[in-house]
Image 1 (cartoon, rainbow, N blue to C red):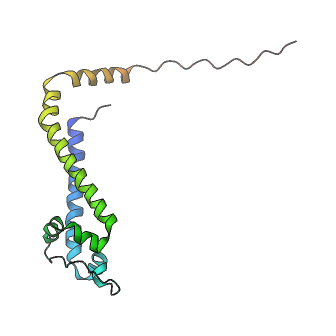
Image 2: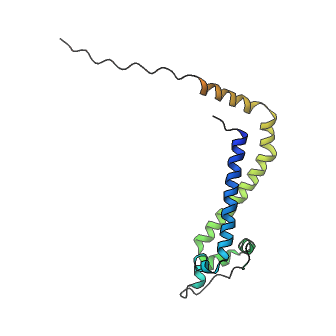
Image 3: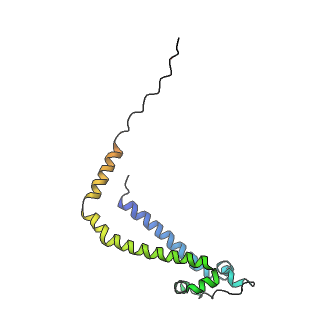
Length: 146
């Protein structure tokens, strides 16, 4: 069964609200003094020679710092695996961004202008509303041979 527009919008708004709340919670907890050792453990480890740069103390100031961080700094502090992972994430974000633009500008208007989507939904509703076929009769036991 296809989801209605209000159900999709409600689910989107709920997920957006949860994500926003978690982002704000992380941004707040990161600045609390008693959780610095949890969010920045390499800054407090005495055995590490190359320590990461100190993040700015503001609520959202870490965002710009991470966005402008150089790949060489990531390799020095976290290793080549982390740099490769971050590179994969950035390529994924870029691909997702352009595919989203393509979908919103080209594909969505084409789907909304015609009635092909409605025809498919109507056919799916028809197929889902048909009664199921009756079950096969149970197999007959073999007859004994005299």
